[in-house]
Image 1 (spheres, rainbow, N blue to C red):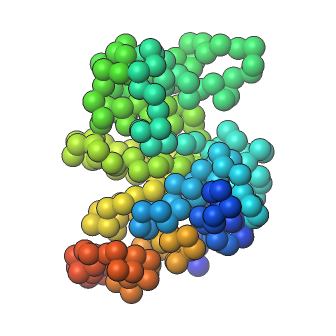
Image 2 (cartoon, rainbow, N blue to C red):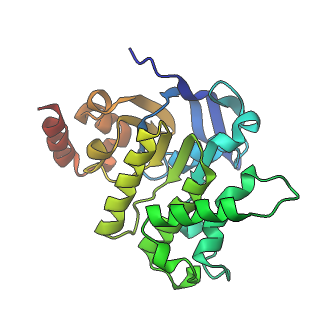
Length: 255
């Protein structure tokens, strides 16, 4: 029995695009202080789920609660790392400026970031290994460096729940290792981190809990219970060509 408080609760969530349902009747509860992987085939509604939870997409019905309250009352407790492709990287701004944006939510409308906020932003840059790039234009960064900027900005938000949309896509091995270490640090601080993830091979190593999604919720629970060949087959159907490799990973983590 998990005694941790519920960080995120979703009830009867249904979302449509142009009257075509993308998510159907999603019900789940995620405890605080865990790393959660959201896994499913392309078009399964993974990004839609976290965008709807963040209030970035309208819902047909249902609700999402954070620590028992709607997003409006817990907005400062929720951070978001979007896909890199969704950002205009030609915008003329420095790495430090982007990270400093993460502090804006906690400022009064009449206040600009001060010494405290700049110190926090600088520490976040150190945490993700980007201090030496602080004055560089974001357009001059590599893909992995851009992802680290996003992570630093999220750290500056000082949230209790983080949504991350495919943070490992297109990054090098060093950046992937740095992201994993950062996720574990957030967990150690008691944060809940929900990550849209596509790599079945690494999933059992990265996450405490797995959420299997294909328009409907297939399963959600501890990785050892949910990351099984049977449930993966149910989630992916004929699309899964690496089920045998995934099954080997399941066998390894259960030994």
